[in-house]
Length: 52
Image (cartoon, rainbow, N blue to C red; front, side):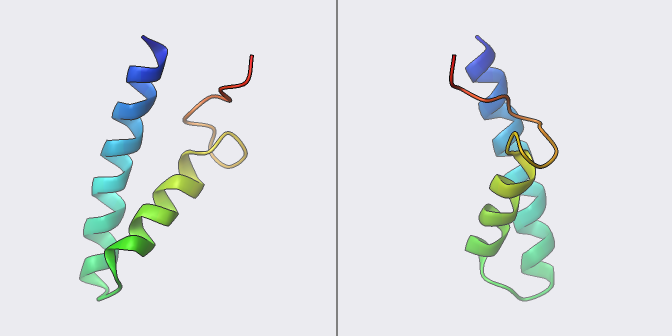
């Protein structure tokens, strides 16, 4: 169930970053990369480490 919550966080963050970078006229992939970096356990820690 925790992985479903992590996916919701990733999708929500991806939508926000893609909208932001598209307004700056950058490709959408830049927004997806930024979302992945921000959500990672080593940046903001929104998604926990999957290793157990």
